[in-house]
Image (cartoon, rainbow, N blue to C red; front, top):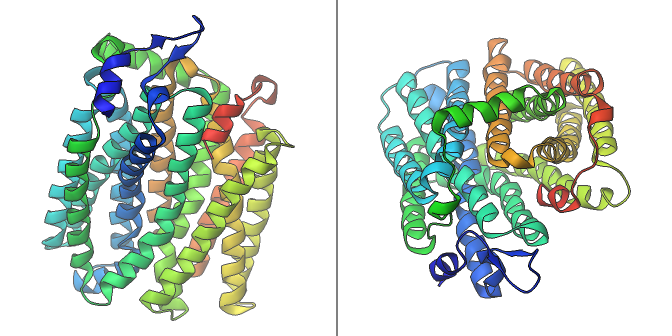
Amino acid sequence: MMKQLVDKTGPGTQVGDPTEEVLPGDLMTNRQRAQLVLVLGALIAIGPLTIDMYLPALPAITTGLQTTETAVQLTLTGTLVGLALGQLLIGPLSDVVGRRVPLLAGLVAHIVASVLCVFAPNIAVLGALRVLQGLGVAAATVVATAVVRDLFSGASFARIFSRLMLVMGLAPILAPTLGSGLLSWTDWRGVFAALAVLGALLIVVAALKLPETLPVARRRHGGIGATMRDYRGLLNDRAFVGLVLVAGLAMAALFAYVSGSSFVLQREYGLDEQEFGLAFGAGAVGLIAATQFNVRLLRRFTPQQILVSALIAGTAAGLLLVMFAATGFGGLGTLLASLWLVLAATGLAMPNAPALAMSRHSEAAGTAAALLGAVQFGIGALSAPLAGLFGTGSVPMAIVIAGGMAASLLVMLFVVPRASLGTVDPDLAVALH
Protein backbone atom coordinates (compact mmCIF):
# COMPACT_ATOMS: atom_id res chain seq x y z
CA MET A 1 0.00 0.00 0.00
CA MET A 2 2.83 2.40 0.85
CA LYS A 3 4.44 1.69 -2.51
CA GLN A 4 1.17 2.51 -4.26
CA LEU A 5 1.01 5.87 -2.51
CA VAL A 6 4.58 6.71 -3.51
CA ASP A 7 3.95 5.73 -7.14
CA LYS A 8 0.65 7.60 -7.23
CA THR A 9 1.96 10.92 -5.97
CA GLY A 10 5.37 10.78 -7.61
CA PRO A 11 7.46 13.91 -7.15
CA GLY A 12 4.59 15.90 -5.68
CA THR A 13 0.90 16.28 -6.43
CA GLN A 14 -1.04 19.52 -6.44
CA VAL A 15 -4.29 19.07 -4.55
CA GLY A 16 -6.81 21.78 -3.72
CA ASP A 17 -4.70 24.87 -3.26
CA PRO A 18 -2.47 25.08 -6.37
CA THR A 19 0.42 26.37 -4.23
CA GLU A 20 0.33 23.40 -1.87
CA GLU A 21 2.42 20.34 -2.65
CA VAL A 22 1.06 17.05 -1.38
CA LEU A 23 3.69 14.39 -0.70
CA PRO A 24 3.02 10.64 -0.38
CA GLY A 25 3.10 10.77 3.40
CA ASP A 26 0.19 13.21 3.46
CA LEU A 27 -2.05 10.49 1.99
CA MET A 28 -1.09 7.81 4.52
CA THR A 29 -3.50 6.57 7.15
CA ASN A 30 -2.52 6.67 10.82
CA ARG A 31 -1.85 2.94 10.70
CA GLN A 32 0.47 3.31 7.71
CA ARG A 33 2.34 6.14 9.43
CA ALA A 34 2.71 4.03 12.57
CA GLN A 35 4.12 1.18 10.49
CA LEU A 36 6.54 3.56 8.80
CA VAL A 37 7.74 4.93 12.15
CA LEU A 38 8.34 1.39 13.42
CA VAL A 39 10.37 0.43 10.35
CA LEU A 40 12.42 3.63 10.25
CA GLY A 41 12.82 3.62 14.03
CA ALA A 42 14.30 0.13 13.87
CA LEU A 43 16.72 1.25 11.15
CA ILE A 44 17.82 4.28 13.16
CA ALA A 45 18.16 2.25 16.37
CA ILE A 46 20.77 -0.06 14.86
CA GLY A 47 23.29 2.80 15.04
CA PRO A 48 23.23 3.34 18.83
CA LEU A 49 22.92 -0.40 19.39
CA THR A 50 26.02 -1.08 17.31
CA ILE A 51 27.97 1.65 19.09
CA ASP A 52 26.87 1.00 22.67
CA MET A 53 25.82 -2.63 23.08
CA TYR A 54 29.37 -3.89 23.48
CA LEU A 55 30.48 -1.19 25.96
CA PRO A 56 30.08 -3.38 29.08
CA ALA A 57 32.36 -5.94 27.36
CA LEU A 58 35.32 -3.59 26.74
CA PRO A 59 37.30 -4.83 29.77
CA ALA A 60 36.54 -8.44 28.79
CA ILE A 61 37.71 -7.80 25.20
CA THR A 62 40.95 -6.32 26.57
CA THR A 63 41.62 -9.53 28.49
CA GLY A 64 40.30 -11.91 25.84
CA LEU A 65 42.38 -10.51 22.98
CA GLN A 66 45.39 -9.83 25.23
CA THR A 67 45.62 -6.19 24.24
CA THR A 68 45.60 -2.75 25.84
CA GLU A 69 42.66 -0.67 26.98
CA THR A 70 43.63 2.10 24.55
CA ALA A 71 43.60 -0.34 21.63
CA VAL A 72 40.14 -1.56 22.62
CA GLN A 73 38.87 2.04 22.74
CA LEU A 74 40.09 2.41 19.16
CA THR A 75 37.50 -0.17 18.09
CA LEU A 76 34.85 2.37 19.10
CA THR A 77 36.76 4.98 17.10
CA GLY A 78 36.61 2.66 14.09
CA THR A 79 32.83 2.53 14.25
CA LEU A 80 32.59 6.32 14.44
CA VAL A 81 35.02 6.73 11.54
CA GLY A 82 32.85 4.41 9.46
CA LEU A 83 29.78 6.41 10.42
CA ALA A 84 31.45 9.70 9.48
CA LEU A 85 32.81 8.55 6.10
CA GLY A 86 29.67 6.60 5.32
CA GLN A 87 27.41 9.61 5.72
CA LEU A 88 29.57 11.70 3.39
CA LEU A 89 29.43 9.00 0.72
CA ILE A 90 26.01 7.42 1.14
CA GLY A 91 24.02 10.63 1.61
CA PRO A 92 24.78 12.06 -1.86
CA LEU A 93 24.72 8.54 -3.40
CA SER A 94 21.16 7.93 -2.20
CA ASP A 95 20.10 11.20 -3.86
CA VAL A 96 21.38 9.82 -7.18
CA VAL A 97 20.45 6.11 -7.22
CA GLY A 98 17.55 6.06 -4.78
CA ARG A 99 17.16 4.90 -1.18
CA ARG A 100 16.74 1.13 -1.29
CA VAL A 101 20.00 0.06 -2.93
CA PRO A 102 22.33 1.92 -0.51
CA LEU A 103 20.19 0.82 2.45
CA LEU A 104 20.16 -2.88 1.59
CA ALA A 105 23.86 -2.84 0.68
CA GLY A 106 24.68 -1.14 3.97
CA LEU A 107 22.71 -3.70 5.99
CA VAL A 108 24.48 -6.55 4.18
CA ALA A 109 27.83 -4.94 5.04
CA HIS A 110 26.76 -4.64 8.68
CA ILE A 111 25.71 -8.30 8.85
CA VAL A 112 28.95 -9.54 7.28
CA ALA A 113 31.06 -7.36 9.57
CA SER A 114 29.14 -8.48 12.67
CA VAL A 115 29.57 -12.17 11.81
CA LEU A 116 33.28 -11.69 11.21
CA CYS A 117 33.61 -9.83 14.54
CA VAL A 118 32.47 -13.01 16.26
CA PHE A 119 35.58 -14.75 14.94
CA ALA A 120 38.03 -11.81 15.17
CA PRO A 121 41.43 -13.29 16.15
CA ASN A 122 43.01 -10.04 17.34
CA ILE A 123 42.30 -6.41 18.09
CA ALA A 124 43.51 -5.14 14.69
CA VAL A 125 40.99 -7.28 12.81
CA LEU A 126 38.22 -6.32 15.23
CA GLY A 127 38.99 -2.63 14.74
CA ALA A 128 38.89 -2.92 10.94
CA LEU A 129 35.59 -4.80 11.09
CA ARG A 130 34.12 -2.11 13.33
CA VAL A 131 34.84 0.43 10.58
CA LEU A 132 32.81 -1.73 8.18
CA GLN A 133 30.03 -1.94 10.76
CA GLY A 134 30.03 1.85 10.95
CA LEU A 135 29.66 2.14 7.18
CA GLY A 136 26.64 -0.15 7.26
CA VAL A 137 25.09 1.80 10.14
CA ALA A 138 25.63 5.05 8.22
CA ALA A 139 23.51 3.72 5.36
CA ALA A 140 20.62 2.92 7.69
CA THR A 141 20.83 6.29 9.45
CA VAL A 142 21.10 8.44 6.32
CA VAL A 143 18.44 6.59 4.36
CA ALA A 144 15.94 6.59 7.22
CA THR A 145 16.28 10.37 7.51
CA ALA A 146 16.05 10.83 3.74
CA VAL A 147 12.90 8.69 3.52
CA VAL A 148 11.14 10.97 5.99
CA ARG A 149 12.15 13.95 3.86
CA ASP A 150 10.86 12.18 0.71
CA LEU A 151 7.45 11.46 2.18
CA PHE A 152 6.71 14.45 4.43
CA SER A 153 7.21 18.18 4.75
CA GLY A 154 6.43 20.95 7.23
CA ALA A 155 4.60 20.01 10.42
CA SER A 156 4.12 16.38 9.29
CA PHE A 157 7.88 16.06 8.82
CA ALA A 158 8.43 17.55 12.29
CA ARG A 159 6.07 15.11 14.00
CA ILE A 160 7.45 11.98 12.31
CA PHE A 161 11.07 13.01 12.77
CA SER A 162 10.52 13.89 16.44
CA ARG A 163 9.29 10.34 17.05
CA LEU A 164 12.41 8.97 15.38
CA MET A 165 14.61 11.23 17.53
CA LEU A 166 12.96 9.75 20.59
CA VAL A 167 14.08 6.33 19.34
CA MET A 168 17.59 7.75 18.95
CA GLY A 169 17.44 8.79 22.58
CA LEU A 170 16.02 5.54 23.94
CA ALA A 171 18.33 3.20 22.01
CA PRO A 172 21.53 4.29 23.82
CA ILE A 173 19.72 3.83 27.14
CA LEU A 174 18.76 0.26 26.29
CA ALA A 175 21.93 -0.78 24.45
CA PRO A 176 24.36 -1.20 27.41
CA THR A 177 21.61 -2.86 29.44
CA LEU A 178 20.96 -5.31 26.59
CA GLY A 179 24.69 -5.89 26.30
CA SER A 180 24.96 -6.52 30.03
CA GLY A 181 22.09 -9.02 29.81
CA LEU A 182 23.77 -10.88 26.96
CA LEU A 183 27.05 -11.00 28.87
CA SER A 184 25.31 -12.73 31.76
CA TRP A 185 25.01 -15.89 29.64
CA THR A 186 27.54 -15.45 26.81
CA ASP A 187 30.88 -13.75 26.19
CA TRP A 188 31.66 -10.59 24.22
CA ARG A 189 31.56 -12.44 20.91
CA GLY A 190 27.90 -13.21 21.55
CA VAL A 191 27.14 -9.48 21.47
CA PHE A 192 28.33 -9.30 17.85
CA ALA A 193 26.35 -12.43 17.01
CA ALA A 194 23.24 -10.68 18.33
CA LEU A 195 24.03 -7.62 16.15
CA ALA A 196 24.29 -9.90 13.11
CA VAL A 197 20.87 -11.41 13.87
CA LEU A 198 19.43 -7.91 14.29
CA GLY A 199 20.87 -6.86 10.93
CA ALA A 200 19.36 -9.92 9.27
CA LEU A 201 15.93 -9.13 10.68
CA LEU A 202 16.19 -5.51 9.53
CA ILE A 203 17.15 -6.42 5.97
CA VAL A 204 14.05 -8.62 5.71
CA VAL A 205 11.84 -5.86 7.13
CA ALA A 206 13.36 -3.21 4.85
CA ALA A 207 13.07 -5.38 1.75
CA LEU A 208 9.41 -6.21 2.41
CA LYS A 209 8.03 -3.08 4.09
CA LEU A 210 10.03 -0.10 2.79
CA PRO A 211 9.49 0.77 -0.90
CA GLU A 212 11.62 3.14 -2.93
CA THR A 213 10.58 6.66 -1.89
CA LEU A 214 12.68 8.75 -4.29
CA PRO A 215 11.18 8.68 -7.81
CA VAL A 216 13.59 8.88 -10.73
CA ALA A 217 12.28 12.35 -11.63
CA ARG A 218 13.40 13.72 -8.27
CA ARG A 219 16.91 12.24 -8.25
CA ARG A 220 19.90 14.52 -8.46
CA HIS A 221 22.09 14.74 -11.51
CA GLY A 222 25.52 16.20 -12.13
CA GLY A 223 27.57 13.47 -10.51
CA ILE A 224 30.60 14.12 -8.35
CA GLY A 225 31.00 17.66 -9.64
CA ALA A 226 27.61 18.77 -8.34
CA THR A 227 28.24 17.12 -4.98
CA MET A 228 31.62 18.83 -4.63
CA ARG A 229 30.05 22.21 -5.47
CA ASP A 230 27.48 21.68 -2.72
CA TYR A 231 30.19 20.82 -0.19
CA ARG A 232 32.30 23.82 -1.27
CA GLY A 233 29.36 26.17 -0.79
CA LEU A 234 28.79 24.82 2.72
CA LEU A 235 32.45 25.11 3.69
CA ASN A 236 32.53 28.74 2.53
CA ASP A 237 29.81 29.64 5.04
CA ARG A 238 31.64 30.64 8.24
CA ALA A 239 28.53 30.48 10.43
CA PHE A 240 27.60 27.01 9.15
CA VAL A 241 31.13 25.68 9.67
CA GLY A 242 31.27 27.19 13.15
CA LEU A 243 27.95 25.63 14.16
CA VAL A 244 29.04 22.27 12.77
CA LEU A 245 32.20 22.48 14.89
CA VAL A 246 30.12 23.40 17.94
CA ALA A 247 28.00 20.28 17.42
CA GLY A 248 31.09 18.15 16.76
CA LEU A 249 32.96 19.29 19.87
CA ALA A 250 29.88 18.67 22.01
CA MET A 251 29.75 15.19 20.46
CA ALA A 252 33.43 14.76 21.37
CA ALA A 253 32.58 15.31 25.02
CA LEU A 254 29.78 12.76 24.76
CA PHE A 255 31.93 10.08 23.13
CA ALA A 256 34.79 10.62 25.57
CA TYR A 257 32.24 9.56 28.18
CA VAL A 258 30.94 6.69 26.05
CA SER A 259 34.41 5.25 25.40
CA GLY A 260 35.86 5.77 28.88
CA SER A 261 32.96 5.18 31.24
CA SER A 262 33.09 1.37 31.19
CA PHE A 263 36.73 1.33 32.31
CA VAL A 264 36.26 4.12 34.87
CA LEU A 265 33.07 2.79 36.44
CA GLN A 266 33.94 -0.93 36.34
CA ARG A 267 37.67 -0.95 37.05
CA GLU A 268 38.19 2.23 39.06
CA TYR A 269 34.91 2.24 40.98
CA GLY A 270 34.18 -1.49 41.02
CA LEU A 271 30.76 -1.65 39.34
CA ASP A 272 29.87 -4.95 37.70
CA GLU A 273 28.53 -5.19 34.14
CA GLN A 274 24.89 -4.93 35.20
CA GLU A 275 25.51 -1.98 37.54
CA PHE A 276 27.42 -0.21 34.78
CA GLY A 277 24.48 -0.71 32.43
CA LEU A 278 22.16 0.96 34.95
CA ALA A 279 24.54 3.88 35.57
CA PHE A 280 25.05 4.42 31.84
CA GLY A 281 21.32 4.23 31.26
CA ALA A 282 20.65 6.85 33.95
CA GLY A 283 22.98 9.27 32.17
CA ALA A 284 21.24 8.60 28.87
CA VAL A 285 17.88 9.27 30.52
CA GLY A 286 19.17 12.69 31.57
CA LEU A 287 20.37 13.43 28.05
CA ILE A 288 17.09 12.50 26.35
CA ALA A 289 15.06 14.31 29.02
CA ALA A 290 17.04 17.46 28.27
CA THR A 291 16.35 17.14 24.54
CA GLN A 292 12.61 16.88 25.21
CA PHE A 293 12.67 19.78 27.70
CA ASN A 294 14.36 21.82 25.00
CA VAL A 295 11.08 21.82 23.04
CA ARG A 296 9.45 23.69 25.92
CA LEU A 297 12.35 26.10 26.21
CA LEU A 298 12.02 26.99 22.53
CA ARG A 299 8.63 28.50 23.28
CA ARG A 300 10.32 31.22 25.36
CA PHE A 301 13.92 31.43 24.15
CA THR A 302 15.75 31.39 20.83
CA PRO A 303 17.94 28.43 19.84
CA GLN A 304 20.98 30.74 20.10
CA GLN A 305 20.17 31.64 23.72
CA ILE A 306 19.59 28.02 24.71
CA LEU A 307 22.75 26.86 22.95
CA VAL A 308 25.06 29.41 24.59
CA SER A 309 23.53 28.83 28.03
CA ALA A 310 23.85 25.06 27.67
CA LEU A 311 27.51 25.32 26.64
CA ILE A 312 28.29 27.57 29.61
CA ALA A 313 26.55 25.14 31.99
CA GLY A 314 28.25 22.14 30.36
CA THR A 315 31.68 23.72 30.63
CA ALA A 316 31.11 24.53 34.32
CA ALA A 317 29.92 20.97 34.99
CA GLY A 318 32.93 19.63 33.09
CA LEU A 319 35.32 21.62 35.29
CA LEU A 320 33.57 20.25 38.38
CA LEU A 321 33.97 16.77 36.92
CA VAL A 322 37.73 17.31 36.56
CA MET A 323 37.97 18.50 40.17
CA PHE A 324 35.98 15.55 41.55
CA ALA A 325 37.94 13.04 39.45
CA ALA A 326 41.32 14.51 40.48
CA THR A 327 40.56 14.83 44.20
CA GLY A 328 38.16 11.93 44.71
CA PHE A 329 35.94 14.26 46.71
CA GLY A 330 32.53 12.69 47.28
CA GLY A 331 33.49 9.42 45.59
CA LEU A 332 31.31 7.87 42.92
CA GLY A 333 28.28 10.02 43.76
CA THR A 334 29.82 13.38 42.86
CA LEU A 335 31.51 11.91 39.79
CA LEU A 336 28.21 10.59 38.43
CA ALA A 337 26.32 13.76 39.34
CA SER A 338 28.76 15.99 37.44
CA LEU A 339 28.82 13.55 34.51
CA TRP A 340 25.03 13.61 34.29
CA LEU A 341 25.02 17.43 34.40
CA VAL A 342 27.39 17.46 31.42
CA LEU A 343 25.14 15.01 29.58
CA ALA A 344 22.06 17.11 30.28
CA ALA A 345 23.82 20.22 28.97
CA THR A 346 24.87 18.24 25.90
CA GLY A 347 21.24 17.21 25.42
CA LEU A 348 20.32 20.90 25.21
CA ALA A 349 23.25 21.93 23.01
CA MET A 350 23.32 19.19 20.38
CA PRO A 351 19.82 19.73 18.91
CA ASN A 352 20.09 23.53 18.72
CA ALA A 353 23.44 23.69 16.93
CA PRO A 354 22.19 21.45 14.04
CA ALA A 355 18.89 23.38 13.90
CA LEU A 356 20.74 26.65 13.43
CA ALA A 357 23.14 25.12 10.90
CA MET A 358 20.49 23.31 8.83
CA SER A 359 18.26 26.39 8.65
CA ARG A 360 20.96 28.12 6.57
CA HIS A 361 21.02 25.68 3.64
CA SER A 362 17.59 24.30 2.77
CA GLU A 363 18.68 24.13 -0.89
CA ALA A 364 21.24 21.44 -0.03
CA ALA A 365 19.70 19.92 3.07
CA GLY A 366 20.82 16.36 2.37
CA THR A 367 24.43 17.31 1.77
CA ALA A 368 24.40 19.67 4.74
CA ALA A 369 23.04 16.89 6.98
CA ALA A 370 25.71 14.49 5.70
CA LEU A 371 28.50 16.99 6.42
CA LEU A 372 27.07 17.76 9.84
CA GLY A 373 26.85 14.09 10.78
CA ALA A 374 30.31 13.33 9.40
CA VAL A 375 31.94 16.10 11.44
CA GLN A 376 30.06 15.13 14.59
CA PHE A 377 31.09 11.49 14.41
CA GLY A 378 34.56 12.35 13.05
CA ILE A 379 35.44 14.59 15.98
CA GLY A 380 33.77 12.09 18.30
CA ALA A 381 36.04 9.40 16.85
CA LEU A 382 39.10 11.46 17.79
CA SER A 383 38.00 12.01 21.37
CA ALA A 384 37.84 8.30 22.25
CA PRO A 385 41.54 7.49 21.72
CA LEU A 386 42.60 10.94 22.97
CA ALA A 387 41.44 10.10 26.48
CA GLY A 388 43.00 6.64 26.22
CA LEU A 389 46.44 8.05 25.37
CA PHE A 390 46.71 9.33 28.94
CA GLY A 391 45.25 6.24 30.55
CA THR A 392 41.74 4.92 31.15
CA GLY A 393 41.15 6.53 34.53
CA SER A 394 38.58 9.12 35.50
CA VAL A 395 40.96 12.11 35.24
CA PRO A 396 41.86 11.72 31.51
CA MET A 397 38.21 11.09 30.66
CA ALA A 398 37.12 14.15 32.65
CA ILE A 399 39.73 16.38 31.01
CA VAL A 400 38.63 15.42 27.48
CA ILE A 401 34.96 15.88 28.39
CA ALA A 402 35.57 19.32 29.91
CA GLY A 403 37.87 20.26 27.02
CA GLY A 404 35.25 19.36 24.44
CA MET A 405 32.58 21.47 26.14
CA ALA A 406 34.94 24.42 26.65
CA ALA A 407 36.15 24.32 23.03
CA SER A 408 32.55 24.17 21.82
CA LEU A 409 31.71 27.27 23.88
CA LEU A 410 34.75 29.18 22.57
CA VAL A 411 33.85 28.39 18.96
CA MET A 412 30.28 29.54 19.54
CA LEU A 413 31.39 32.81 21.12
CA PHE A 414 34.31 33.74 18.85
CA VAL A 415 33.86 31.93 15.51
CA VAL A 416 30.12 31.96 14.81
CA PRO A 417 29.00 35.48 13.77
CA ARG A 418 25.80 36.01 15.73
CA ALA A 419 24.41 38.63 13.37
CA SER A 420 24.29 36.09 10.54
CA LEU A 421 22.29 33.41 12.36
CA GLY A 422 18.87 34.84 11.62
CA THR A 423 15.79 32.82 12.54
CA VAL A 424 15.00 29.12 12.53
CA ASP A 425 11.95 27.51 10.95
CA PRO A 426 9.84 26.38 13.95
CA ASP A 427 9.02 23.06 12.24
CA LEU A 428 12.73 22.39 11.74
CA ALA A 429 13.56 23.35 15.32
CA VAL A 430 10.98 20.88 16.64
CA ALA A 431 12.01 18.16 14.18
CA LEU A 432 15.58 18.20 15.38
CA HIS A 433 14.59 17.45 18.97
